[in-house]
Image (tube, rainbow, N blue to C red; front, side, top):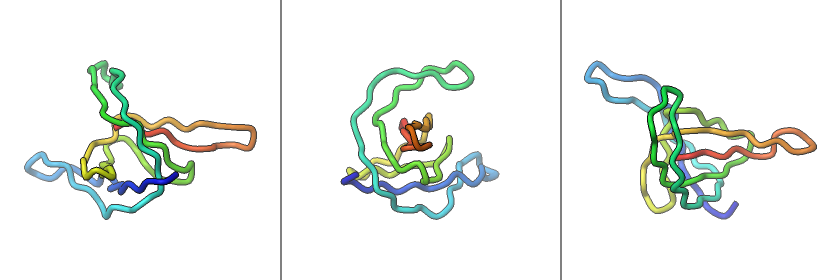
Length: 95
């Protein structure tokens, strides 16, 4: 993986209704454009911008925030873990 992204974990929502995030962590990644429409758990249509591949050991969850190499800051919409013959191989994060 030849790129770097930062992942800030979602912490809470403040009294003004704004999301609060923890300290961001830099991780190695591969970023690809991604424009296929997806649906959220409640059926809402979402239009992602990118697909981010990270190691299977990286902690990332829904509602976390990712800063891409181009400086774009996007919320995590979906996380998928891929498995191979020896267990988890990587995670695909849709933002």
